[in-house]
Amino acid sequence: MKLLVIGPSWVGDMVMSHSLYITLKQQHPSAEIHVMAPAWCCALLERMPEVNKAIVMPLGHGDFKLAARFRLGRQLAVEGYDWAIVQPNSMKSALIPLFAGIKKRTGWKGESRYGLLNDLRSNKTDFPLMVERYVALAHPRADMQNNHCIPTLPWPTLQVDAANQQSALSELSLDTESPIVSLCPGAEFGPSKRWPEQHYAEVAQHQIEQGKQVWIFGSAKDIPVAEAIKHHLPRNLQGKCHTLAGKTSLHQAIDLMALSSVVISNDSGLMHIAAALQRPLVGIYGSTSPKYTPPLAEKVAIVHTDIECRPCFKRECPLGHLKCLKELPAEKVLAAIQQLTDPAHIAASHR
Image 1: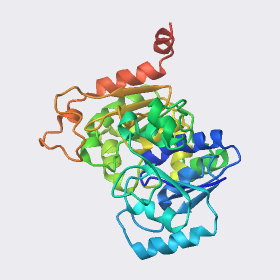
Image 2: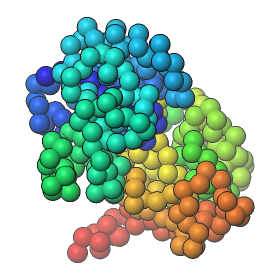
Image 3: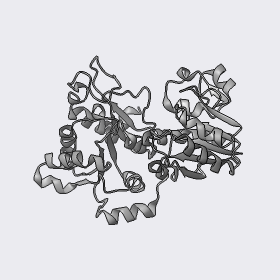
Image 4: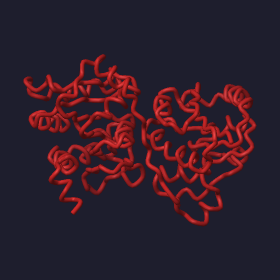
């Protein structure tokens, strides 16, 4: 069997989609799985052994371009795919499998997709987690309509490239002599997911004073917040804080984050990468909720405020105060770090 999966466009969603690929491989061990996704997601696909081939989606996230999609579909027709699974909900995402002549086309009921998909699923609300909705597409429609639950839900697990890891350490003049606390203070979604840099700096200062070093991850867009965190630190501690935002490829970020003793992250793609690396993780939630896209790992602590207006799922605070993040103190995150990493706390939690 040969499958084409139209994958999601966001880093966090792509990490969670690994659960689908694992399930497909469990059900069809000899299947060949190809995944089409934006170029920035291909580094993730290359760390998923179940994926045989990553195909770069040449069209932008918002581009419709019917003629270009038709040409792309016809180019893929020569692959002879038996089955297509479409993870996004848009109409345009379902066009390429149709144009490729793939006989079985599976996906959730979405934006005008009747006829485009012939294995259309309509009971999405039976599966509250995004990862459950992904995995449900691997199972027969009748089973998912009758059982309303996923038999097994494998967690995403990204492979680490040890040689690339050592190369990145050398290139960025990093060492592992003291425990590494990784901070991920960015969020592509918007300001309503970003815990203030002053709070991150409090956490960083405390951890450095405890004999640890801090690495700050992110894209080029996160350079200002990474630098702000570092500059909030006392000058004598700044040498133990390394701003890696905008300096690493996604491959390098994966391999370096795998060295972390703990990761503190907003609800972002990097949070899901940390979870897939099975690193102890403190996930900070503002306008969003872990009830839909939780980090899937064993050692996870979720922190948030309990004000009435959250979760609102807005990119910017509709009330203009951003209290859900501003009123989340650093002490709460530090307590979560201790809970995850202190041997005494871990032992007590298992009694």
